[in-house]
Length: 437
Image 1 (cartoon, one colour):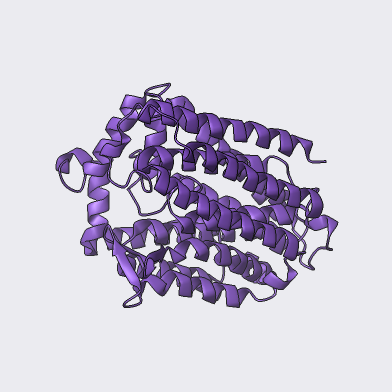
Image 2 (cartoon, rainbow, N blue to C red):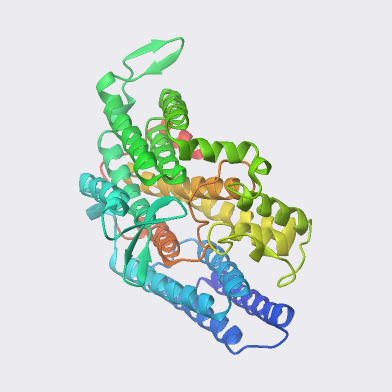
């Protein structure tokens, strides 16, 4: 039972152990005990989740856990390479916290009915989480972005957990109001337009995104949540008009923000020409470009590059460190692992018979895709740089724990049909086609 998953986890464990050994000998010249302990602990945690899946979710997909485990292992390995044993041990602790939460979800969440019944509660909770860094005293500004809560020695990014609750909130709300949002009021130039009152939810999300952009001075968070809402609207209705309306609002809001707020204009200026301010705001991006160039096809080798020249490389620019030391081959492998998770979520969404469950799976696929696109696009210069983390890879607990919660929800959904009947709302043919695109 689940032999494919077990065999893949064995390979993942060996890869992680080998990577730690290479880092020790290449970068330090000796074998540190922590370089053995951490891979063993990680393997134990992943196999514990595997055992729980065998017992409680036997029909869930077998490729999802190994893909997430390998990404996490690569992240911990690079953190060990960049910050040493202390940083890697801290990240391993967060992997343990993630594993505990995954196990709880897999065992204690028999179905998603109770979650989908109260979408407004989840939506409001998500908005509160997004706004929490603006609170006095506990809100913290790091690198110009107000994304953090800090209580004593502990800090967290509430926006990462807002992803989880907003996916559930969006799914419940959109499934409940599917017929209203699909209704065609009129056609202009062949574009099907909804009623003006039905556009109100999108306008509210747009306004919240702008407020986040202004208050938190972060382009990534506002872009992530707004784009996810627009794409989920499209998946729900299969109406291209929502994409057009959403894109128009995005252009209007982005242009206005760039003209009014200096920090937004600076992001775009650095993106267009980081070498114009190579010693100032463009320093990180320029160093990242040099690192990518140094990596070439096969990389400089683990422990052989100079990724530490990039400020905050273990968090904001960890993908650049991977590309420098593992080359285009290693970076492509990481992207393929992300693609596997996204494809798995899309496939799960296509198999769901209830709109609510379909939208949860689609929401997970959309959020993972957008965050990977925004973060990796930012560090490679394809998009403006943002404050988002690279999920599963970056140092820090908030992003890692939230990402593993999404994996747990997806695994639970994949085993859903074995446990519960479907919700009353059934998918239309248009929606099935939309989610399969």
